[in-house]
Image 1: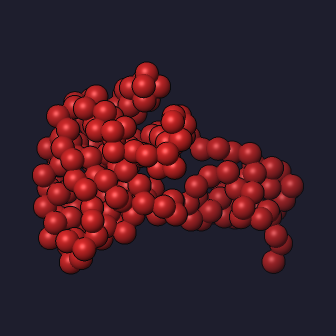
Image 2: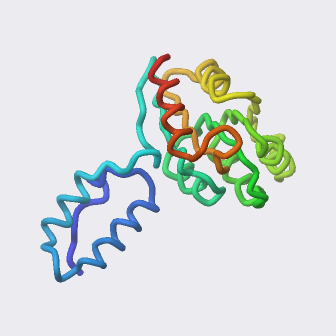
Length: 191
């Protein structure tokens, strides 16, 4: 076994990104020097809209994960943090199940801000999950991204993390996840 770099030096959040780094290293193994693989692993900070740091404001870190257009992508994002988060979720309904997301929300989210057509479906799945009552999860509803950002800011305290990771497509309000993510970042940067 050839070590590449210590996990603590990887700039990307989450185990899924460690797995992606290892897959990329395996794909180029023997063709690219180990030092080059390590340099990329230690310097690459990710792509826009995927657990993208937006801003630290009043001790609250904001992240854009607008590419989280399905429950599995949002689950990977939630698992990337060690503390409970304020999650903004919901959007266009692709008619996929939200039950797999519910236990992850209870485990990783302290305030859930829901919007869009899937907001009620996500809430129903979360409320039906065993342990919901004991989890202390606060659920808020927003009619727009502007309202969702405002509610998240009101709920946040210094040390908190807010993440937009919708677990849904964007087509109810936006042409694609990129436009949704850019709008979210504009709103957060205007706070």
